Amino acid sequence: MASVELNHIYKVYQGGVKAVNDMTLSINDKEFIVFVGPSGCGKSTTLRMIAGLEEISAGELRIDGRIVNDLTPKDRNIAMVFQNYALYPHMTVYENIAYGLRISRVPKDEIDKKVHEAAKILGIEEYLDRKPKALSGGQRQRVALGRAIVRSPKVFLLDEPLSNLDAKLRGDMRSEISKLHNRLGTTFIYVTHDQTEAMTMGTRIVVMKGGYVQQFDTPKNVYNYPANKFVAGFIGTPQMDFFDGTMKKDGEDVLFSLDNGVEFTCPYGLVDRISTSYMDGAKKICLGIRPDNFLVHEEWMDADKFPYLARVKLNVDIVEVLGGETIIYGYLRDKNGNVYTEKSIRVKTTHDVDVRSGDDIDLAIDLHKIHVFDALTEKSLIQKIPSESTVNITINSQEAKMNKVALKLEKGVSSEVEEGAAQMFIPSDAISFGTGDVKAKVRHSEVVSDKKLYELDVDGNLVFALAEPSVDYKDGEEIKIAIDQSRLSFHQNGKSIEAFNTTDVLSGKLVKSKEYKTYIYEVEGVKLPISQEQCQKLFSAKGKVILKTPLDFKTSAYDLDMTGKDFKGTVTALYDFGKGKKFAKVLLPSGNSLIVKGEDLTINGTVNFSLNMAKTFIIDHTISIILA
Ligand code: ADP
Image: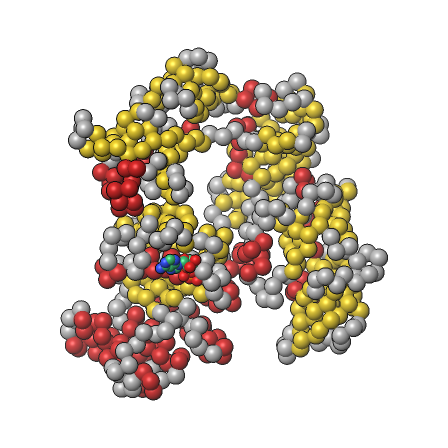
């Protein structure tokens, strides 16, 4: 039983291949975590780093709270099960299972007890005297599992354990491994390229691509709220179909115009999580529809179940009857009735339909289930937890006028924006409850993950606010909220005005100090001590090359130590966001500037501060890897 924590883990192979990039995951005790993604995305490398079979290039790995980077595999208290079973052919099943224990000099009677227990759990008691070659693939994989079980590891690591088995056996073994997990109550980490395995077995799944984590969530959330187009396409069979196009808001309707000539309208309420900046009829979006959410006539007749539909016509190409379900491939007809033959789409139905190649059929899109992505970034625009809300405003005399109400803009904001129309973006976590002077009415709230998501009406605008679960207001209640104006961003006159950036990077390096006879940092020309632990981390990540490596010191204004005196600079600009949120831009003697937070700041005044090393990221500048 153990938790597993990955903290900014990287793997760089010789030759510079970054197989795993900045992976930070917190895996709880007893979870069944599945790493899934296409071949070469870094799944096995990650698992092998957890096992201790592959060195970690940078980052921290903890098992049960303890840093294990430098522990050998056998000291990590983990057991690994491989795809190719790795059984000894000359030993019996019994001997194979007992082997690890025998090497560890476990008493014979204890070995015997453990082997029989494991064999019983796995249903292989009657084969204990056989050699592996007299077993089927599924039985061999059970033996491999048995060998792991008898060691009572804290964490089970399984690397594509079922991929050598045929489809039927894979299905059976899938549920057996899930049962085994329930029975042992141990943390399981499982690697597969098969999304069905991931969806059916994982308590949470990690979807990877190109060495990066794309999403880490429950199977249900990954399916219903994919973080981006890649995840949406990778999870779910048959695959989601994608259509480029635009959206245009017209009162309470939104018109989707797809590049394939198909048009339909959707009530705004179903897509109100999407910023209206995407609904101007010009900005490119990508619509995603799963084959299950194209409904055939028999399905949508059940109107109570599907109140929001958009009708489209399909020219059928191929029909695949798979027994319980049918997959229809075909081409959509555009708004003029022409068949769009460039891309075929898939429709999946469990109804008994009588359609043939060449038929024209009526379909309906279940509008509750559509997905929309930014065409450029491919990020999902319908997030489970919307990251921000968009409010249309007019800026006049340092006030942001919404519909009837005006929000007084603090100096730090009003100096950045111009008079006139603008869109204002409010991050969902920039709103606090109970303290402010902005009137809001609760429309609805729901618990999402470990937070509470509120949908608020602020002067006729829908505003999302993320709160702690203890914040408790009823639907319809009139409340007061405060908006952290330093977090606002804007779109005005065709340009984006980004939210105030409180993160800065200082340049430095690690040097050997003659004076102190030890290693120290030199940051923007200032000498700073380094903890022994951090020094060890840097050397273990890079070796001696660390002394020649340019380092970036990334810090936030919120994390600086304003009582410290290491750095001295001159205030060149002040930003006042009200309510005790005052920042200053400080010019250092090196010529570099950074933002600090403080109360008694005056322009041209002198400021002293120190870095809080516990909260500063130290990054290898040349390859962008967080070293400490
Ligand atoms: P997956 O398990 O998702 O198929 P891997 O973790 O095996 O992916 O590989 C991730 C990437 O690292 C791939 O690009 C692969 O070519 C590369 N890679 C794996 N092992 C090595 C190695 N020993 N040396 C160099 N590159 C490697």
